[in-house]
Length: 61
Figure 1 (tube, rainbow, N blue to C red):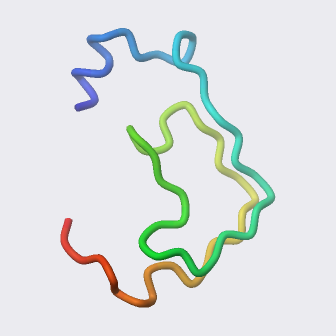
Figure 2 (cartoon, one colour):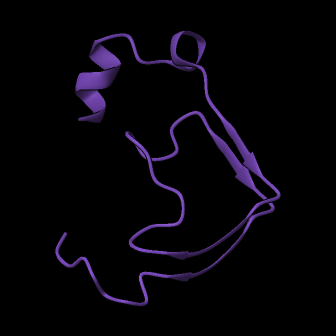
């Protein structure tokens, strides 16, 4: 997937990115912070992420 995205022009200059900072993220069903291509071109800092996937609602890869 990464090589395919790079081949189609994915780069910081054309896609941009996000800042995710200073948040309290908790009691999420499966993931605290997630997105297509992971956190590519993102800065994820200073967050307090806890109590994630405690219910075991989703399993697998």
